[in-house]
Structure formats: C-alpha cells, structure tokens
Image (cartoon, rainbow, N blue to C red; front, side, top):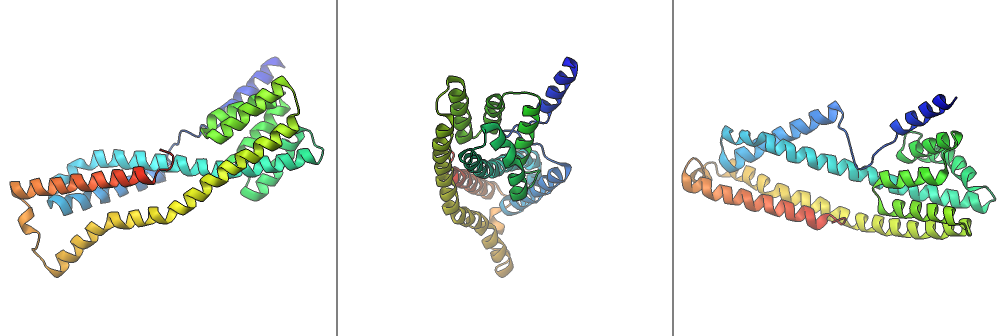
Length: 261
C-alpha cells in the first residue's frame, strides 16, 4: 500500500508543468526553421545581395528560436494569470457560500473546465490538486509548488500568504478574500497595460517592415538604384552599418515594449 501511494505521488509529480520552460513540437520547430530561412534570405538579399549572407542562418535561427520560446512562455503565463484570477474569485464565492477551502477548490474544477476547457492551464492544475487531495497531500503544499512553478509573482505571493496563514491560523477565509481581491486588481492592471500596448506593438512590427517595403518599391520603380552599394568595400561597409543600426533599433523597440523588463 505504501509503495502504491509512493508511485501515485511520483506519477503526479511527473505531470506537473514548469511554466518557465517550453518545448517545441516538431511542427513549431519546422515553422521556426522556415521563418529563420526567410529572414536570413531577406537580410542577405537586401543588405549584401549575396548568398554568402546565408551563412548567418544558424545565428538567425538561434535568435528566432529563443524569441519564439520566450513569446510562447509569456502567452502561456498570461493565460494562466487570467484563469487563476477567475479561479480565486470562484473559490472565494464558494467559501462565502459555506464550503470548506478544500471543497471550494474541488468544486471550481468543473466550472473552470466549462469556462476554459479541461486541458487549459488552470484546468490541469486543479486536476492535480484534486488528485493530490485524494492522496492526502496538503492543499497549501500543492499551492506553494504551483506558485513556484508558475513563475508569476502574483500567484506566488498568493500561495505563500495562503500557506503562512494556514500554518499560523487566523481568519483564513477573510485572508483569502482580501488577498484574492488584491491579486485580482494587480492582474487586471497588468492586463489593461498590455491591452494599451497592443496597438503600439503592431505599429512597431509595421515600422520594422518599412525598410524592406521601400527597398522592394525602389527595386521595381528604379531598378539599379542601389547597385553602387553592393560588391565593393565601401558599399559593404555602409550596408553593414545600416544593418547594425536596424538590428539595434529592433532590440531597443523590443525592450521598450517589454513591460516586464
């Protein structure tokens, strides 16, 4: 029986998600590969007009791969934050209706499944909590583990306050409601900021495309206009400086738009 319990807990741990990590599927890897190939070809054609520029493909692929990983991690965390906020509000409502804290978390699993789906981030976490409670794992222990894995400050703060209050005693229900309200307000503020920045991020992407669009237009309307910038030392030096300025502006724009920095 003890071995069975140990196996169950080990299996439970293996199903946990580390939200600071992301593993590409083969389709996503293939998409990233073609994106890097296209980007390298565009830069090689515009700045050097030479296939030798394709030698930069491994570096471009590495940069795009890391960027895509970062973006997918961030989007998953944003979904988790929204789902967690709704979960805590539902748990608070259940506690106010007279349910125990454990039962409130168990009851909310079905509601989150209907709202976001059983395979959603919070749906999977609530399923782990249900299995953990079945195996007599303390709720605060599971929430602390979830807070650490989430990598989200608001969730981590809530779970730490919950675990401390559970350990020291006191009015736990009032504490959960107050902490849930504060956590919800912080998440809502961040969501409002992200919404306001969405249009600016779109404008940034358009601005990054303008040099390529202008280059294409000039090639069509005034063919040969840029010929003096290629295949000679002075032209290569000028285009290398332009490439450096373009990449520097892209990095700067990314940092300005990153509200987490």
